[in-house]
Image 1 (cartoon, rainbow, N blue to C red):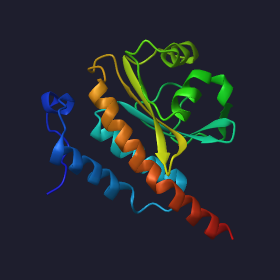
Image 2: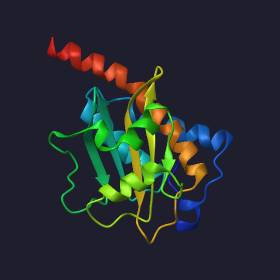
Image 3: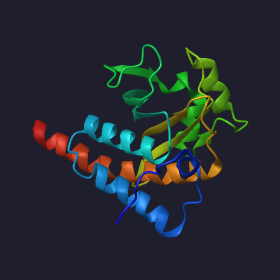
Image 4: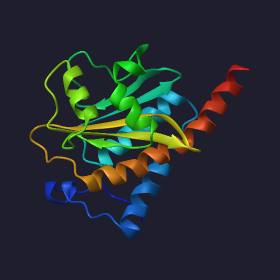
Length: 190
């Protein structure tokens, strides 16, 4: 049967996904992104699916390339100046040292945590901060490829540690596709 999006707010924000429900959510993401053979489209498909699964108002995929972050895609409710497909929006890892350290050590974070990465994010936020956000590393084969970042609006419930744990799994599902897509892109250029 597969995972179906919740039909009302009470079930949309209710968690408790364990066992078969959690397996169906992961399977849903695998099937949603399996067809993509190009990095930007993979990121767009994953961000769209994860935003729906996690009841996020927006989802963002950022890659880590050498010593810099590169924003790849933004979906959902975007702040003024944000676009779905940023063109060469890069910044040094040391612009966000707490985020870089946290992600590269395979750990995520919640806006409700008392962590340097949360303070750092709020300090760099150019517009009004969302009521709730979380960030997780995109990981495959022991390598961190980037960050999956989710936001909710002030009118929506805050993300929980349970949401963070599930999003960690979803970031790993996305990460598992990246090496194959990178190989396909290299082969297409050859």
